[in-house]
Image (cartoon, rainbow over all chains, first blue to last red):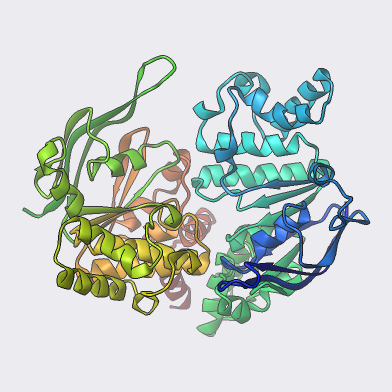
Length: 284
Length: 278
């Protein structure tokens, strides 16, 4: 499922004292099956942007094509878009509401009017994609699960709609290191298996650098940089100047370089940092 | 008396609604927090660390054992306001902690409720906002500020109560990298310059590394307690209980496994760089 965003602008509180241009002529293309990371500080327009992709917000001007269909057109029905583009909000576990895990995940598919066996199949698949054991959790109250498990159930509820594009807004916020890793591994595995388009919004530069095929950097409602993680983080000074961080491995290499060591600073992962440090120690 | 908080054999049980059973969240916790210290509390989700924090300012009361805040027994209801004033608390979500439409009114809210006279309130509002570096924003509306700025306003609101101790429950979980840095810089400054006792509950190991002391909670008990260096060197034990170590400790651990003798007390980027450049 391809996404083409053409020159969209969104203004909050138009003609009011607190008028803010949240999106300022944004154009982006996302190919089918791509894993895209979006970074930007709070208020840079990330959340406003992703809410346009499934029709929750409409732009003041500009076009958004999902698989060639312009979803800004009035005749396009919102449920049709939302079935194709699933959005997982921040802290999605706050949206759990049913008595059992099964009912919670089945809620969306049931509203599509699917037959019972298809609904069961989808709940089963969604739970297995998020790494939960169907038999173990299906009859449990979602509120009896751990924080990381609750979040996975909430994500499963969106996956059960079989969206071709899955947007995740800070899916690991507030989780402990183990829960954090579990959610990331789950997203990686799902992307590999389903080959769906994934858009990940995160403040964790290490995660974004590791997972994304391409990164979109937003600042003041505009897309200011886009490219592979390597290309984007090459602009390290600029990224820091707009209030964002760098992957920790890169920070370490930059500090070593400053001290006159011959190391590459365009590395993104701990594995790469380890290799470089080993080389450095061996060349002593 | 040098302890801000004294916890003696603390047990805390939750009552589970469906079957009425009591589930222990904390059992047999002994912990003293020294005045003026900076302690980080880490543990996985559900380990009991937030329950511990809420027992430190009488938001929760012990099922067994005792908690003393500045010498006051938290079970003594007549001392509740002394306790809350001595130990303020800052939570995860800044939006849930702000009450007024103008920043300075928000800061004045606490002292007003204490019945403090207006001249003194004005002074406290100014000092509190200066302490968090937000004095220039005193006339602004809180909802128009960034996440990090809002959280600093929430902190200023607590400082205006002149607490000796502030308990932070994952104050940076919802912030972007810059907001996190703003809040962490503020916390360190309050500790070093104002002498406020800090208890920081966090999932970010690089934040915990900034404390004087780290207490690791697992299964409702204290699993490790010591300086950041002595705690983070136990990489395997931390992993076993679902925690991570800062990236530098991770790299040092990997190098050690390759037979390189990296000193055990390296936990910060600066220390690693110094070691590699010696």
